[in-house]
Length: 265
Image (cartoon, rainbow, N blue to C red):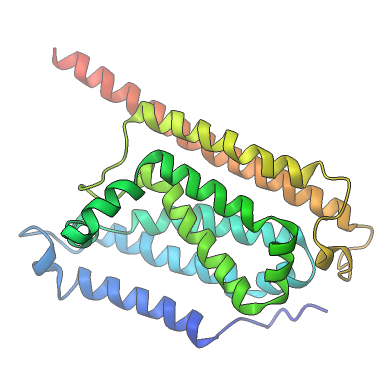
């Protein structure tokens, strides 16, 4: 049975979140004068976004949802990943002031590597490969049986999501977001790149992951096959909805920018 009172409070999880929150607060507070332009106020809106990202991250991997996804339902595990890929990663990037990020990226040792890793093609490939490889049956089921590997899975999902959103939401002025037209093409390319793993999960006639095939059913008449189908459909529909929303925002901004440029002529 599911223990709804079980929340993960492992030192590496709580410590990592607290350290991240403390580091952001120190950089945005006492050390702001060292890194930010003169007169820069405390970034309140970005503070809300950053700390909301930490809360979403904890809810995804520290709440009872983790137990459900690890032991019972593939669809719950898919929800975990979507929380990490979409709200957590988006809020995290929105919560980083440009001067905080560029203090690191301007360093000579980071410039060449950053220029390579923030290329849209690299970002798309990293995200697509990470998500696709982790859904290979052997690796995915191994992560369900091995706690450290499961932690690594979630960390790499979140890291890959930061790559995914960087071309659109980059907080950096050293490596800024790509053009609005490029953003739209980028989102379409990632959607196409993710189609094989979606089709593999959704249309498979076999149960891909033994853990879920033999897991106790927590809902009557909800079979492992239906659970797998729901997970695959959720992967595609949520990803499609978010991508189309991002596409629409980019198109609106592109149209607005073009109209403003024409007006000035």
